[in-house]
Length: 280
Length: 296
Image 1 (cartoon, rainbow over the protein chains, first blue to last red):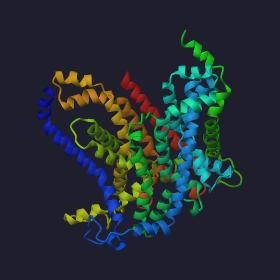
Image 2: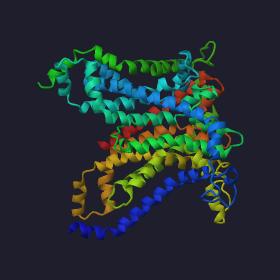
Image 3: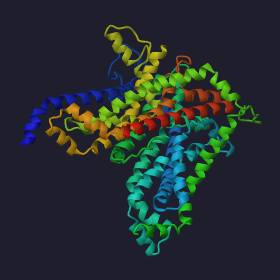
Image 4: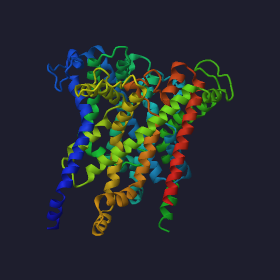
């Protein structure tokens, strides 16, 4: 009874709040929607006044042209290689290290945890030039490995796993030891399967970080056949006369994998128990 | 007593944890410690990336502190940060509140739309906003001229193009911070609100005196991350206007990139990098100190 009384009294509030929310939805959605609709317009229609919301003669020429004659297909493959391999390696390194930080109490493990945290104070942008020299001296310049390898270590991923493994009771570990399981075997057989949600969350974050990376790939990749999508798109933007038809097509294509991934794994992103350091 | 026993047992294991941290240990040494140390050393040399690295003492730092372009980039970066951070804070908190409150309808769709910008890279976000704010082809100017106004120079006026970048950055930065706020808002105990309602507190009073204090730790994190992130902005502004018009909106990272990689002044760029790092650390420490004082 109280509930019905309050809900009728709240009606104006509900209308206002819902209206405000949808206004905000428009603010966030319209730029993307306008961009999407424009990408289906033929080149001649893009700049012809009066502008129309919907394309009069919808075409996918921008996409096909970007895909074939502007090497977007190649950039796509490169980015996919980078994002997938970096994600797999990040999960392996973070899970192993996070587990060690959570379940062993040696003094040097604790010191190492502090070192990992300290890396967040030293982001790639700050040590761009010397980091480039290190990668060059290791002979990785102009290879996709140069993009992948330095990005495998992340404080965020490591601490996501550490926080999770802290919640796993030590009894489980003790029981495995009494049964004679080796340490690594315990991690592989018991702990990793338990941490599946964390693995998926970190996988999506890591994939997003690497897919959208710009400045680091730009610094270490020189050969256009090695470019990632972000560099490729930036090259089209940086041209003397921007070819908007191709630019719109290439941009929309480059967004598809992440949007698809998000729609499938939405709950792992939205319910992610994200701690402080989660922004690489 | 109960705690001592497992800890002493765990301490007997050394090889396993060492193997487990080995990948990260190797990467930490190679890609953080090594470049940090060599970078510091290079910043006292006139190294160009090849040949020898002649020691020049504090020369790079002195030149940096006398370089007008460096100050211009620093000021522009601070202006950008001062614009983006409050805007991002307000937008991410309000979207989060709208997604948590019982008063709104259609949350599941709204949540996806609000989150969409997180999936879009800074480069593509830059392209999207460049397309919206094109001077003689953009939707925004088209609407303005249709309503009888005159074309606004979004690209050729330095302050207006900075405004576009700020709006785009806030648009792109909302989603992640919104996620943090949603989690924080859901953790505020409902009993507080019920007690306040009994005392006759209105919606705004409840928000100010219960919600805001309860989510203060998250607000602190959001502000800190946004400030540090904005100070390092590069990709977004590159796609919107390349730091233009001219060099009017070159930010610090672009300054470092230009010096280090286009002019091959590795030593000088390293010095600039360390100044940037120092600025970031000072900002982080000041915010930590302010937060402590507020707590006590």
